[in-house]
Length: 480
Image (cartoon, rainbow, N blue to C red):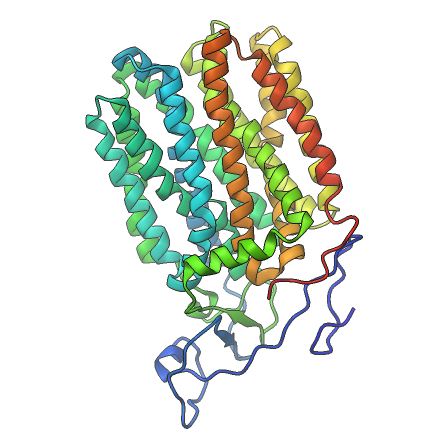
């Protein structure tokens, strides 16, 4: 099909979807100081300082396009930031039993604080994406890492549950929410045109890998030295990243004389905005909620969070404890899930570049649901848990690349990171509900069986919702 400027658009391969049409942007002049990072571009006469809204940055044809180490650096720093942020978000699961033993807090009160942190982690996401459009990725990332590191240090002196609620629920919730999957989506859309699914798969894998890979070490520290030891380790690791990001993370490809990977030399990038971030995020949400497919994506990602971070990520160690398995071995199984998640989600990104994303989601949610229904009925032997861990790890967050692709197709490249942030909010609402509900049901019934069956059933339902995305009344317009 042809877009509005007469060029031929790329076919999506999806029935019921139209590829995003490119809207020609109005030519805008800028002060010479804003063109310092664009070499070989002569200043125009009569330039005026005008308000900037989604600045169109024209890249000259003589700009270099082959400096792969810069793209590796950007992906590497983003990967590490997401990895550490996810590890911070998963730490309350490690602290649950030590805090219960050392301070006498109830499991339900700890679960509530963890649920609030998970909820805020999702709520902050779309606003963080809008703030990145206004202030830049690097500034937002530095501020978020500082907030995470300082708030975790504050928790070292806590003696009451409300202090855990404030530091690990509220403050780290805001901090980790700014270093979440929307960061990966923003980086991918800004720095890549080709292989977006593969790169997003790698970055998405870091969020689960970090939350699971850190657990054995943190659990061992808590077991041998008390609950303060893992808190200090998390704070130190987070603060170490701050100078690395400040010194080495470029803001935009043009800052290094590049165009996005896979783009043409005359690629035009949307770089700046002077719009209010709060208004931008809310406007994107209101426009998205008028589309049926937004609610399907939101609901399926709700189930994704319900079945991963909220249930298994927060309660798996406690589930194993109910069957006589220690904290360190249980954390080891979670770490194994994290290792296989890195493989599974990266592979999912590769598949997303090639296959129908809806049927990938159908497979992921369906298999995940069936495995959760089966979990309470296994014998919890090392062999059984290893099989479950490998299978569940491969599927842990493999849903992210196809979900982001569907978001890009439905809402357009410009709005997709913010809309995806709202979809991630659904993920975190689901995770918060599961984290809290599982603790309540366990305390009331003395078992996690009903919760696991409920979560598994939700996974099967989500599989059929995913298969229905893009059908019926197709999305004919993008929010551009």
